[in-house]
Length: 162
Image 1 (tube, rainbow, N blue to C red):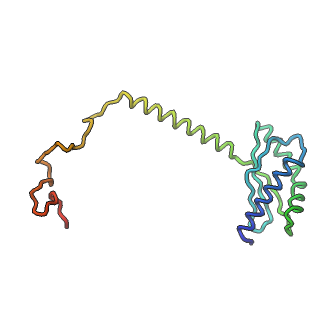
Image 2: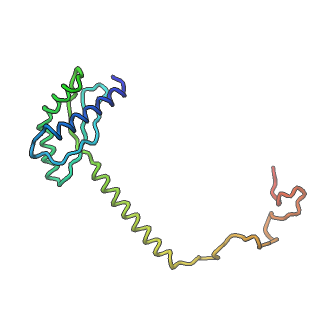
Image 3: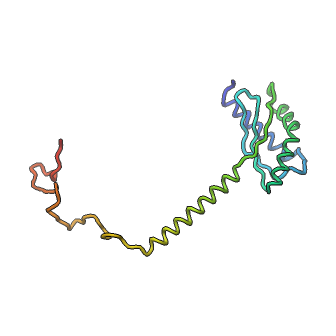
């Protein structure tokens, strides 16, 4: 087991190396518009998981996954050369569902906005079921209310302090 800070630094460095490799060195035509979103490494520094997103259709995502799988060896050797760790971690590429989650959240927010507008539209012509202001106003002096008389010696409006 290693320090969590060291593992995080190594994961960040691996993320930078992989992103640079995909941008400059890997020339596979199947590789689409890829963004490396995160990298996580196990506590023993043996396995690294690289999360990525691909802009495009499902077919382009599948082709990109195949291209990343075929370039895994070259990327791993470059990671080993640039990090200088004793054991180069094995690399696993996982497609990040960040874009799908963001689209789902946008859909939910749009539905909530539409529902709020529907409720606001229904409330425009609505009237109160009872009085418009059901609470007492300063001018009201109903003496028949229970417990609200001013004739106590201590002036506490009939509230007991037990």
